Image 1: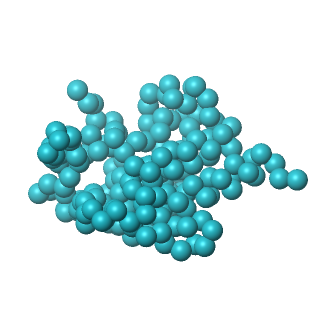
Image 2: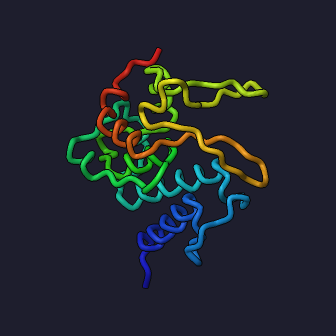
Length: 184
């Protein structure tokens, strides 16, 4: 008989595949035009997969969300396994959070990380037609391994902020310093 934890682990794997744009039944890449590849949907899958991971590890509680400090040890940093190729901030934070002790550290979020990278002037911000702020690259970004790439969803093209291996390494090496920046 399959335990509840085994069911949760399987559900988590299915959600993670879908978040990466992979059909969990066939292993094939899902077409970029499919709604499952919409970044908003992908972030939902990542979030629910993280909740399941916390439940499986016994660390999902009200206390987890009340932790105020981000802490990562050198050992935890050495365990980080990044997804191959260029990745966005959401995928970066997912890889980091997989190695954290969530009883001692709050989760890393792409929102908090991007705020700090903007303050450091590594990334910039663009206000769109509808007044919505969007994180983008600036004249400093390429030196840190960040770039914008063209993606499409349902026939509409959009720009996505990604980092290459240099960007992943820079963020990993300077993560404590970046997250310790005081935000006003």
